[in-house]
Length: 139
Image (cartoon, rainbow, N blue to C red):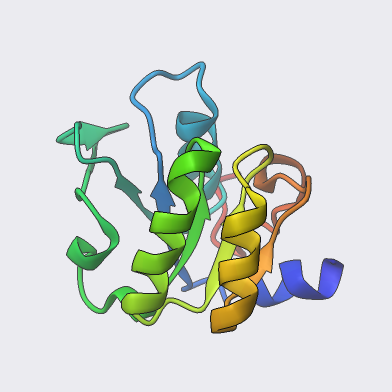
């Protein structure tokens, strides 16, 4: 698993999208977004119901990410019933690396990810514990 996590953080300039980002600071969708920002990464919140989260401009979906969506790695914090559709959108947009935060995966989503060749981190690891800070992290 650590090799896969290392691949998820290939450089300090890697950009991340957080699908299921939340404006509620007690929710994991907010904590994960803040982890990326606090650890020196560019992160974009993905939430169709919000305009901004933590002073960052939200986008409604992965195809709306600034620049090329394929340049992003994605953390997903959604209900399991939604996860497969997010993986389908990731694949459609050329995104290769996805971290399914704890309790978001489903057997259907995992099977789809394997079928289309997405690099997936799943089954328990959380970026809040296992993430690798950027060399640009705030001290």
